[in-house]
Image (cartoon, rainbow, N blue to C red; front, side):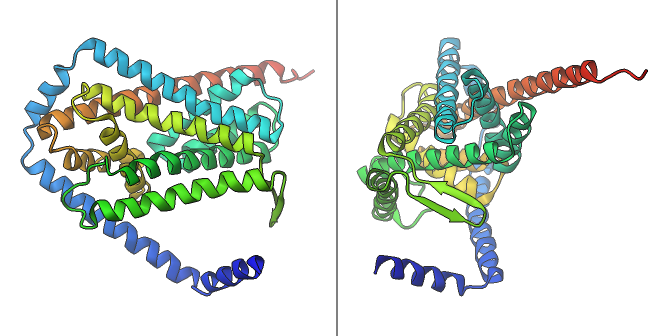
Amino acid sequence: MDTFRIRTTRRRWTRISPRVRRSLGRWLAVLVVGVVAGMLYYLARDVDWPGVWKAVRALPRPTIAMAIAVALSGYLAYSFMDILGRRYIGHKLPLFSVAGIAMLSYALNLNLGMLLGGFATRLRLYLRMGCRKSVPTRVALFSALSNWVGFGWVAGALFVSGAVPLPQTIDWGQDGLRIVGVVLLALSGAYVLACLKYPGRTWMVRRWRIVLPGARMALAQSLSAILSWGLMGLVLYVVLQERVPYAAALGVLLYASVAALVVRVPGGLGTTEAITVAALGKYLPPVDILGAVLTYRAVYFLLPLALALLAFGVVEAKWSIRRRVSRPTPQ
């Protein structure tokens, strides 16, 4: 009976033509872009930009050092999801290499998008190390699933609690946010429960074989992703110098991340700034919030991006040299 219901629901959804689905997606993106653009205009027209720069420069160096340390911890927490993927998939790459590739791809993913960062980087580097194409693909999908399961737990709990402030431009208020939170908790809980009840269950999706992990793996996925998201919010909390509640800072980043995903702006550039300033305005002056958010972006996005590009260049150079040395000389 449950199988019949699932198939019936799937048939109803597939009755909507791909053209209509693409059109709905475009209109949703246009709507979000419009809201964000309005918030950006409202924010930028009255911003004291010299004051923002002054606020950035006024941040104590120990605060910036602490933010960098927390950001490094966040990247390490993210890399643990790829390490779990190594165990789930069963490939034999060294742990150090897996963690390094994960952190490099995470930095590129945050700034350049999932396909170029999260997937393409893993694909190239895993292939360089002798893996089949299916390995980096499965690792990227496993890591993405882990990431969003953890997002569901963290965002769901915060949204239900009512501790997350909303911009005044959002009409559906805390009740709507609580409904979203309940849905997110239900989805993450359903995944863990399915892993508990049906470990090893296998599905074939076209040519891909999907195996449901066990309950321990599902819990490890959840914990690593919860830690990753929590440390991301902690970076913003640190650069705000603890003048905003941690739950508020983290919660705003969580729904700003979803808005950036819908808008498809690399790194959520502009989106995160606009939403954060609008949501946290009751705690601090906009100048101070914007200065903190720009510092957060520099610490969690731009500095890791620079290091990732440098590391990627070094890896490519080493590989090129190795290939030239191993190439047979003509007789």
